[in-house]
View (cartoon, one colour):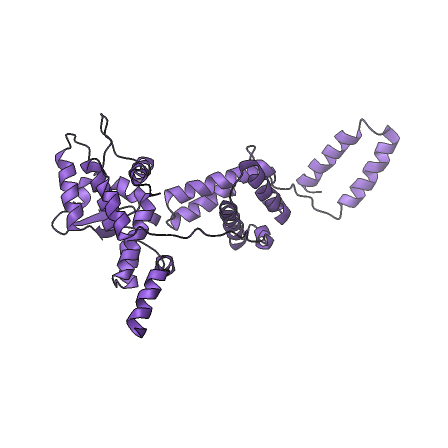
Amino acid sequence: MPDSSETFRSQMVSRLYDTLPQDQLQSVLAVLDSALQDYDITRKPVALVPASGIPEVVKYFLASKAVENLSRGTLKIYGLRLEDFFRRIQKPFSDVRANDIRLYLYWYKTEKHASDGYLDNIRRILSAFFSWLVTNEYLVRNPCSSVECIKHQVPERIPLTPYELEELRWVCRTVREKALVDLLYSSGIRASECSAVNLSDIDWKARSIVIRHGKGDKRRTVYFNAESELSLRKYLETRQDDCEALFVTIRRPHHRLGIRSIETEIGKIGQRCEHHVFPHKLRHTFATSGLRGGMPLDKLQALMGHAKPETTLIYAKQDQTDLQREHSRVYA
C-alpha cells in the first residue's frame, strides 16, 4: 500500500482502538486491509485554505489584476471584499456554492444596510474572482454565474449648469479654493489625480499637466484654460513652503492635499451656494461641456483617461435642453 494508505490505516486504528473490542478490531482491520489493496488514497489538499480562512489563491488573483494595471484603490477594494467574504462563510473556495454567495449578500444587506447598487458591486467582484479561478483551472464552474444580478436604479448624472458653475466660483473665499475649482473643471481630472499633481508636472507655456498615474496607472496629458492658469499662479504666489505638490494643506507643516480633503473642500464650497458638489461632478461638467461644444468623442476619451469609449458615452446622455435645441434647429 502507498504511504498515504498506511497513514490512513494508522489513523483508523487509533480512532477505533478505544471504541471496539480487540477481536472486533482485528476483523475490521482485516476487511480494511483487503479493501485498500485496490485503492490509492491521497490526502485532500488544504494548503489553499490557511488558518486565517483566506484562500492563498486570492493573492494570486490580486497579483494578476495588478499586472492588468488595475488601480491600487481598486485592488484594495477587491482584497477587502474577498477577505470579508471568506471570513464570513468559513469555506474553502472549492466548496463555495451559489447559495453561499446569496446568503452573504443577504447578510451584508441586512447587517450593513447596503444599497442595491453596492451589493451588485460586491456580486461583480465575487464573480470576477470565481471566473478567474475557472479560467486558471482552479475550478470547473463559477458558482456566481447563477447568482442573479441585483437590480438597482443608477442615479442620474446631472452636470452643473453654466450659471451654477459661475456661482460656485463666485462663492470661493480664497485663491486656493478658486484654483482648485477652476483646475478640476477645466482639466476634467479626478480628485486622486489632482492630489498627485506636482509642480514639476506642469508646463505653463502649453497650459498642460502630465498625469503620471491615472486610473489603471496610465499616463496622459491634460490641459487647463487661461482662467485656471491665472487662479493657479495667484495661489502659488501665496505659498511659502517647499512641498513639491501643486495643492497643499493650509496648516503647517504643509504637505500634499489628500483626496478626501479635496472632496471635503469642494463639498463645503458647494454648500455655500446650496448645491451638492463633488470633484466628479466637476469632471462630469467638463465632459458635458466638451460634448456640447462639439469635441470628438475619441479626443474627449483621451483627455478623460477612459480605456473604452463606452465609458465616455455615459456622459453623452442627452437632456431635454439638448433635444429642444436640436428640434428647433431642424424643424423651426
